[in-house]
Structures are given as structure tokens and as C-alpha cells.
Image (cartoon, rainbow, N blue to C red; front, side, top):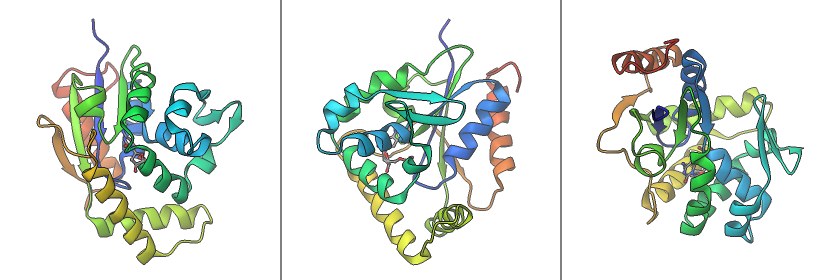
Length: 214
Ligand code: DC
């Protein structure tokens, strides 16, 4: 029997990460934050991204991410690393090299995978595909709050500009651009609290008989 996948795609700061983790937790599924792999390539070897994507030693353990044994979880979240990740993500060889790494996360009882091309390229046979959006203003505010909460100084106008640039680059690239799969259910989270978004997705999972615990 194939292991079920729930694909959640969408632009930066649409809430994919938090939503994916909560849906995975509720269903007892594994969770893949695919952006972390692109961020790891950006951090580990931006000058030889293709080679790095194939060879880097990564461990995901207890909610932390280790690169060659070193905990890089917090470093990966930095805005500068995200911007570089969006750059290396344009390279077709990097995307190809990361394909198998991402697919290896598909293990019983199931996987919730979030990113830009989960439903279109990496798991086109996903049992449920969600395209999560939010208005640019709401996304910039969310990212601003995340940074301030972590004690990182942030400027709302500059963040807004950076997010818009990143989305444009992610949507315009030739390979696996950010776009909803034709069979994805679109969900706008702008006016919805996290719990409501998670509840809606869990409802769609129940309709499809996904996850014993839902
Ligand atoms: O989701 P994130 O912000 O951590 O992703 C960082 C960058 O990685 C994003 O700007 C584009 C790229 N990315 C991608 O191209 N494909 C994915 N499935 C996930 C991320």
C-alpha cells in the first residue's frame, strides 16, 4: 500500500510550516519542511550548490536540524539564509539532487510535506494537496512578528519588499515554479487563525479517510 502524503504548498510566510506541523501531529504523520533543505544548501556550500545538495550530511532530530553534526536550526531561520535559498533553488541540478532526499521522508504511517512544489513535482500522487495563501500585507506582518518575538530587529517595510521579491523569484523560475497543482484545494489564511486552518485541513483529511488519529 502506498504511504499517504498531504502536500501543503504556498508562498513565504503563508503559515505553511506551523500548519504542516500541527496537521502532522494530529494525524501522527511525519513532517517534511522542504524549504529547510534549500536553506541547508545555501548555508553549507553556496559556491558549489549542486555538489552540496548531494553530499551534505543532514540529520533531523527532535525538532532540531543538524548539518555535519552541528545544530543549525536557528541559523537556518535567518532571513538572509532564506533569500540565498531562493537563489540556489533556481538551479535545476540542485532541485534534482534534493528530490530523493525529500521522497525519503515518505514513511508509514504517512507524511505531511510543505514547500513550493510538493504537490506538483515531489509528490504528484499526494492524497490531498492544499495551496495555502495569505495577502502580502498579512504575510509581512506575520514574518515581522516571528522575528520580533525571537528578539531579532526587523523592519516591516523592508520585510514586505523582501517577501515580494522572493515570491516573484520563486514563481518566475523555469523549474518547478511556485504554483498550485491543478488538483490543489486553495485556502486563504489571511483572516483565519491557525487552529481554524488546521481544522479545515483535518476535515479534508477525514473526508479522504487519511490518518487514523484525525
Ligand atoms: O519555505 P522556506 O522559506 O523555508 O523556503 C526557502 C526557499 O527555498 C524559498 O524561497 C524557495 C525555496 N524552496 C523551493 O524552491 N522549493 C521548496 N519545495 C521549498 C523551498
